[in-house]
Amino acid sequence: MDYRKKYDMWIEDEYFDEETKAELREIEDEREIEDRFYTDLSFGTAGLRGKIGAGTNRMNKYTVALATQGLASTIVNKGQEAMDMGVAIAYDVRKFSDEFAETAARVLAANGIKAYLFDGIRPTPVLSYAVRELGTISGIVVTASHNPREYNGYKAYWKEGSQILDDIASEILEKISKIKDFKEIKMISLDEGLENGLIEYIGSEIDDKYNKEILDRSIRDGEELDKEIKVVYTPLNGTGNIPVRRVLKDRGFENIFVVEPQENPDPNFTTVGYPNPEDPKAFNLSIELGKKKDADILVATDPDADRIAMMVKEESGEFIFLNGNQTGALLVNYILSSLDEKGKLPKNPAIVKSIVTGDLGKKIAQKYGVETFDTLTGFKNICAKANEWDITGEYNFVFGYEESIGYTYGTLVRDKDAVISSMILVEMAAYYKRQGKNLLEVLEELYQEFGYYKENLISVVLEGIEGSQRIGRMMDYFRKNPIKEIGNMKLSSVTDYLLDKTGNEKSNVLKYLLNDGSWYVVRPSGTEPKIKLYIYSKDNNEEEALGKIKLIEKDVVEKLMSVE
Image (cartoon, helix red, strand yellow):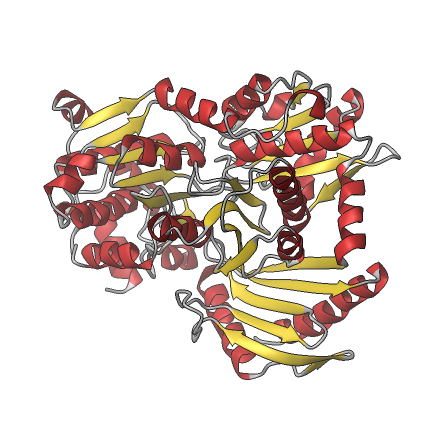
């Protein structure tokens, strides 16, 4: 069916409500109509992610119901035991998140599957924890994470507490493909679901257990830490406000100052615009408050509180942003050195990182006899190693991280977790402050010991049908025409993860290793309309390492943008 027929069907079919129809009738731009209906919002291993609005290529209650019916049919296919285990459902502060979560619960209940629905906004890691704590077969969190305010999303989890991998995603997709009409989707009212016990609210009991278990995972305390450390925190109007402040207070950190305009939920993210703490501009209000309070560090979490970033005050009083690789390396060093010192490193310890994350953490891990594993991007892949080792016992998962400011310590949660990470970050800063050092000085010590590992990430946004097609052409061109030489650096090897033989799932990612150890990766984003270029270099001289980054960036971006 072409996009115009789909549009007309949504306008004419009595199944769709008048509000939806009115929204569609008001569209005057034919390209906008085409973009909303030229394809269906695809259900991948990241679930759904898209702009909010009416249409098959948008996030709305109808596409959420369709995806949930696919999930429900998958669970029903696994038998009564799986249906009785149920599904935990959480949601964040974004527009319609509560409605989408309720829609999912109503579809599941109509299919005879118990739905455990949180009674208010919750961070994504709390959903992951709830799946394991409640023993559900699956989980759903309605969130678009750090995307702009126009977006919302839907992430699906399996019984291990981690996001679904390709095997389950393929089953769900196959069930969705068999639904030819929205009227085939089963749904009951919320009241009916509550009355018959197939929908049940989750309250504070899960939050209390989660908080306690995080506190149990603290590494250092007492005289080892400077509990007077001053921290400015912003939840960026998201879900982190209550759980992050609670865990820091319970750890004894009293000087936590919250950025007031960004304290409470705001689906428009009025004071920040783009609510991604990976972007230093998200810290503008934090810097103002940090200077007033003479803070040591600034900490920000994204709207669903799975990502976390920080800035550190240097001697001049200015705040310096640390990227995900730098923060990750500091955490690897702090966690492993502390556990090693205390004799608490487990047998066969391992850390896990993504293939687009830098190698400094790996070098640090080697010092402590800890193995490092690389996976495809996304915590569904990182935490899949923890799930695997639960069964095999081959390694013990200590820490997982990726350059896009996602971290998790231990196996309490099988996803990136900004709540437990906030506790470890502040604990780490307090430990080094007691020693008279800030985290910038600690990072410099790591560079001097292991070499200067430098990095840069470039994202090119290309929206709509034309953008998607151009990204495809860019990947095809790079796949067929690798750059053989950049400055004095020669191409050493190419890894095409569509053809990967390392045991990873296939993915549209290209990695180019140069003969000096520098490397770069080209990949389309899995959740946003952009193509990403990751550049890494290493040298014993900082200027030389930075120079290599500039050389690679110049040549690769020039070639990338030449593809029309």
